[in-house]
Amino acid sequence: MKELQYLNKYFLKYKYRFLLGIVITIVAQIFSLFTPELVGDSIKTIEFFIKNKSSDTSLLKSELLKNIGLIILCTLIAGFFTFLMRQTLIVMSRFVEFDLKNEIFMHYENLSQNFYKKNRTGDLMNRISEDVGKVRMYVGPAVMYTINTIIRFVAIIISMSNINMKLTVYSLLPLPVLSYSIFILSKEINKKSTKYQQNLSKLSSFTQEYFSGIRVIKAYALEEDRNKAFTELSRDSKTKNLALAKTNALFGPLMVFLIGLSYLIIILVGGNMYQNGEIKDLGVIAQFLLYIGMLVWPVASFGWVSSLVQEAEASQKRINEFLKEIPEIQDTGTITAPIQGAIEFKNVSYTYEDTGIKALSDVSFSIPEGKTLAILGHTGSGKSTVLALLTRIHDIHTGQILIDNHHLKDYKLEHLRKNISSVPQDPFLFSDTLKSNISFGKNQATEEEIIAAAKQAAVHENIEGFANKYDTILGERGITLSGGQKQRVSIARALLKEAPILLLDDCLSAVDTETEEKILNNFKSVFKNKTTIIVTHRASSAKNADQIIVLEAGKIIEQGSPTELIKHDGYYADLYTKQLSEKEND
Image (cartoon, rainbow, N blue to C red; front, side, top):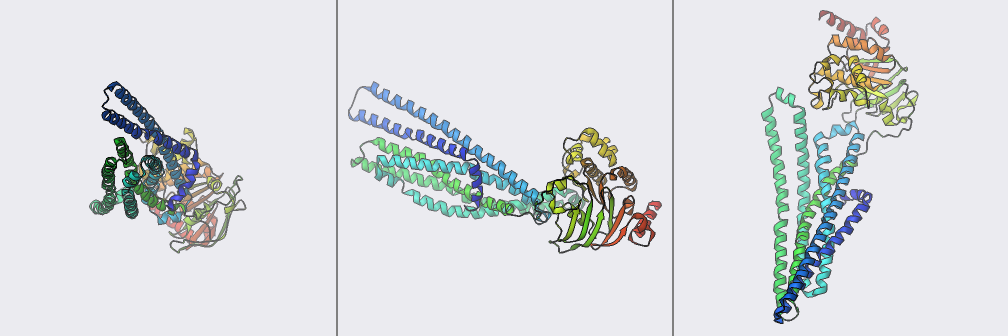
């Protein structure tokens, strides 16, 4: 139960609803106890009339009808309060489920990129859905039936003891055997539930990757191979689920056997006690049979509840593993002043922890407010790392990054990122309308603003060619669009955000040269009011920049204006000459 202690804060949050549920449960159990007593009284009345050979049947009928009416009334009241109990405690579990899912989701948002490199998406999804579902069953049905069982047990045992202690002791003899059996079975359920949930995460991860990469699988004709792998995982999942189900299935027969044994004990012992005169009325035996009958479901549910608790503990353990993850990027800043856009890197170095690759080494440069910097370099030279550090996707190891002469970490993280528009190298679009994807970074953007941004990104004409235009719904990850169209929609999204800092990470790589030229011309007006960093391997994309730096193996090997760099035989001059030659040949 150690892992489930994490949920205590939610019980405290909804303490009034929880306490109300307990009170309602007590009231429901009090009214349900009247039924055995009334049945016993009815049998006593019948027995009295038989023994005394009374001919006044009207009095007998009157007594029986009165008891029947009271039984119906008490049953209806008990049923009504049982309904209220479910409405109170089960609804509380839904609130806890809502809060827990939101807590996990927000924690996922705060975790660093390295966390997502180490963990698969399917596993993350499984923990926020399947595992939280198991925990909800503990907070709701398991807690509710535990409270109900405890109250009913206490009430019934007190009532039985007040009638006849000896018969009470005999009738409850099977319960210690039941408790020990449940203890043994619960341990097995916990083990098998953990294995099943782990396998389910693997299955979820596999299917998520399969559907996301369906293009590649079809291109390589690997459908049959992937089907075999999926079948193997499914078979393993089925085996583990069946093992868990078989263990759970032992509870039912065990309950029936032990409850049946209690019935036999009551009839045997109670019958002997009646014959010996220790029990004066047959109604007592009837009462005990009904009391034990009332314990059938609580005892049976105890086994079910025990399995729910074990499964919930296994799931909460998996959830806690992620909730205990401390985000690498800590939001310790307090500055929320307007950002103008002056950027400075001072002797910045960074090494990726997962690979050990040193991406940047003693990099220094500055960009005045409203100016444009282009970063050129081969693949793996550290260009994208500069942007990742600026947006605090990663934090620097040595050196300083300043914005408007303030250390980057001094800014409140949300404020910093809201003032930066970024177009990643691999654009991500959501399964939503084109309109929603473009306006993603700006709440309540007007249609005119969306269209203007699309025109600046040279994607408006493409969108107008679709049947539903801006209301076209994209497939997963924007699969409906071509690579170039996805990049331009991402550019439109960044432009619409109107942040003072604009970061473009090789965002024209999938665009043809004619469209690139059009976008770059549109950018001339955009760049006037923004501090812009363009990461590119195309020299043509950097020609409108105010300054250029060339990176190689994480170090700056050339730095200057486009005019200065093209004059001498350097990386930029060679690349620019080569690309101009290729463009003329085309």
